[in-house]
Length: 404
Image 1 (cartoon, rainbow, N blue to C red):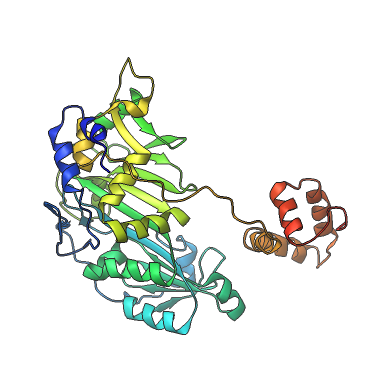
Image 2 (cartoon, rainbow, N blue to C red):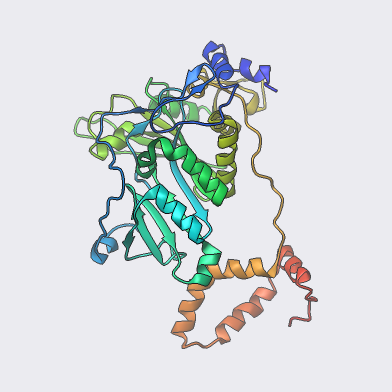
């Protein structure tokens, strides 16, 4: 049911309610890179700015070890030059984990083409990796036993997503059917001047940024030879949490990458969803349409008009310029539950292996394999058991005190 009071809170902005009605009938499919599809009274038509078209297929260059030592393992900011049309939503990053099974490998190659293997892995979890498309990455484990645990990781930043073109929605659906999405970035682009640095700065300073996040921060570029500011980014949330919002000067970013003329104003509002929330949001989008992204954004962040009489800031009127950007001010439902996962010894063992395994191996190697240090750590840790550790022991049928 649509909350008419929520629609009315657009502070006298009629375009907000009109856009809400347009988003009311959420589409079940969407096109994010090329072409269009009707959604209510609106077409979701991403536009391409004047920039070289990303090459289709594999870029195929394997860097030397010396070159790799001077660069990050993987350029997660491999941004495309695609822009979402005003009022539309663009999927600009997909990361997923898939089971390491022969049929999945075959299907994955059909999606991304040939794999150009690299001489390094990824973040210590995968010892093998390959470049795909334009800036994409596929990672796996050479150990069959390890592969059953970690599976296959597919990392597709913006340029790689752009290479998939019209196949991107179906690729996202395939990732959900075969595995789990672990990151998804959805972007709205402002080319009409709604999101200016001055407007955002003033709203934040006035306390009119209302959010579920615990923190926000600014990152500002320096000045060019003419004394003009070179870009900015407003971060709301944290990369380590389930979501992060970035509002940044996309035109300045593209200019820094040498993309050429992209217009005088291009500010991107980008919701990065991580882990279980990313998987839930991807499935919600596939089921309900891209309006689900706007609704989730409304549930987490909004710019408002301060009220001296209303103590609850979430009840303040939504700023007209923010409502116009999003096209709807309706809040989405909670997609992930807060239920605690069952505590098991196997889960604790996996946690130690993933998070502390490399450190333990390094210490044992330095000590010549002497385990006394490890036993000391375990003895000290026993005094720091928390409820989840005691629950895991109880699940395993171990009586407290009997394990000493």
